[in-house]
Length: 327
Image (tube, rainbow, N blue to C red; front, side, top):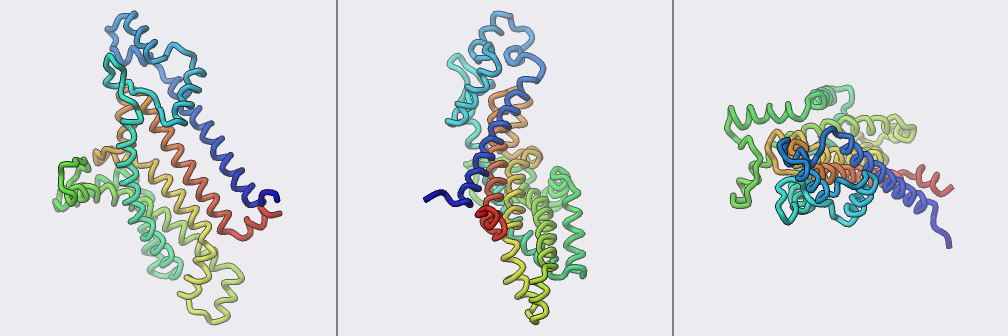
């Protein structure tokens, strides 16, 4: 008994995602290679002797060809080993990049999860409400507010929230620095502003695309038949329009979640949040190349993985695509 066409299509998508990730990893590695300057001299300073620079290049493996170092880095990354950090090196070597990245990555996922828990239900509810009353005042107000937040960059939203909620009204702390010694309630309080900043942006995007998808569904012939049958608007929305837009909505949500996790760099920097995005910014400033490459590869993996998941969910939720896979 052979493999079903649907399974073959999903396997092809997974292989395509893996190939895309390999190409992205090469772009990340060799883009860093094109940066001007000598990394060993940048670490030791301009007054370092040539012998010390060459010794450090030998210790870091920088004397090998770029192709050899790329395959060594990629092989290690597939095993969870991103090498040693250039910063804070001692006689015994540097700290493992994975040990630096994993706690920060956990903080980033926590912030993204909180933002998603706020943004996704709010966006879907407002998008359905706007579609239900399309062309009327609820739709106009919701659409206008969505356009406003879509036009505002994250740092501007963050600074506006800091100005009003932290400086003027003193309701919340302006910085999201975490400390395990603080009480849990105080820790949670410090996450509110960055969570709101990310939620406003993501909610606006998901809301707009949800409304567009549902409104398009309302124009289908079978929806017009439901109107002629006299079915109430709420029933048509929840039992006819919503199930038939599950695939596109899953794609929309997954795409924005991918952006949410990989696009937190600005928000983490504004609120001094100890996440992977801010770690990447600090590593760029310190020319800590292994950390920069690891952060970029992890962000790319999450982005590609979530988009691949959305693609597969769309295939499974769409009868027409399942039929095409079977033919």
